[in-house]
Amino acid sequence: MLLRLLSAVAVLMLGTLMTAGAQTPPTNPVPPGFIVAPMARATIFVRNQDESLKLYRDILGLRVRRDSRFDDQRFNQVQGTKNLGIKVKILQSGDVVYGNVGLFELQGDDRRQTPPALRKTSVVTGDIAVVFITTDIMGITAKLKAAGYAIISEPMVLFPNDAMEVQPLEMLFRDSDGILVNLIQAGRKKGE
Image 1 (cartoon, rainbow, N blue to C red):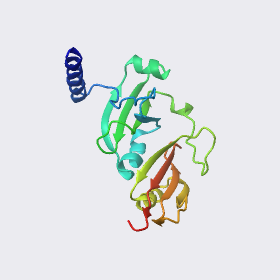
Image 2 (image 1 turned 30 degrees about the horizontal axis):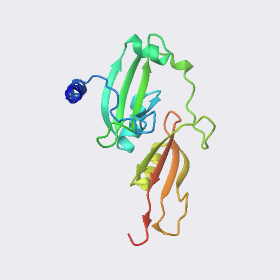
Image 3 (image 1 turned 30 degrees about the vertical axis):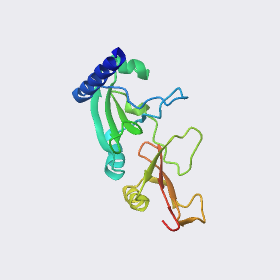
Image 4 (image 1 turned 180 degrees about the horizontal axis):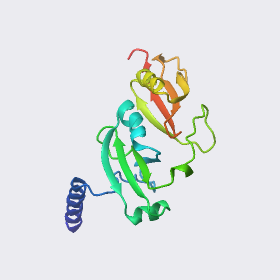
């Protein structure tokens, strides 16, 4: 009984914190037999948050879930920086609290020390890719080309399957900071 009461109080507190705009950890639980939960978020430290939003919000259609700015030294401590502010936008697809994309822009840093974005049209060791499932790979690709993103591979059939009437498609490109973005569109089996 006490455990249920404490759980109910915790849920009420979590809901209150979330509606008040406080930072709360993701609520996706650690599955039995694992020691970490599914990834809550990919955080990308970007050069220009507005430029990044042109892709993640305007082209890929993610919605801004959280929009904040922090100047607290605890953020500097966790990031290994000093005296920097940080603009934070968390973007999501749907109403889930996992699998989000964080666009973090450091404020007050010396831009001359920021290395140029990788625009290479191949992958290199150390690259990181964020992967999205889509239903409009061709439409997104057209928008990416029009906006000048570095396309590594056009939509292509990566794993041909004779059982498919419509083959699944996959493509890869770099965002404005050089981060790889992989889009995958499911195919359709024969007879479906």
